[in-house]
Image (tube, rainbow, N blue to C red; front, side, top):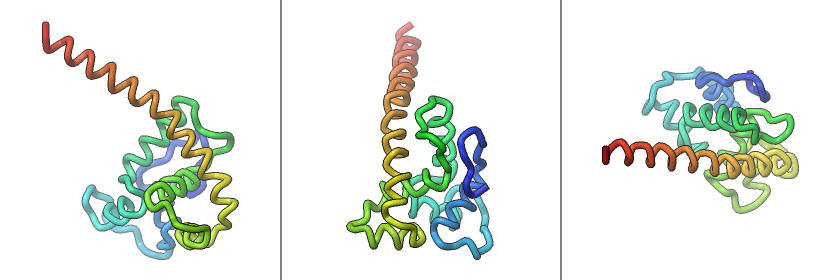
Amino acid sequence: MFFCTQNQAVTVEEAYVAGQKVMGRANRRLGKLLPGSPEDLLFRGFFGVSAQVAVTAWDMLENHSVLPPNPKFVHFLWALAFMRTYPANDTTLSCLLGGSDPKTIGKYVWPLIRSLYELNETVVSICLIVALVDSSLTFQ
């Protein structure tokens, strides 16, 4: 399931496994998958969000139809890692993401970053609606 594509739900455990592969830790046994556990801290440190948040964002991108054509979850993890570290040059970027070609990385990362940007409008709208509903219930 490392290369989960659109229309395939990704579980949190699959996100951890995919994250291990991206981090170059595929040969290590997956530890405890609890919030705050060492495995969780490694995932958060590398990708900037927890595995649960990554899976939720992936699901939202899919549900709101803003994913680029033929998306793969691994490329989404690449995009998260890229945004977390914003490497100074292509060599660093390539090393960070397992030696993949920088042009290949760019081919998949930028469309997913644009997709996250498009999702921003939906998330902000939902948060605004919830805030308005909460405030109207408070004043009744």
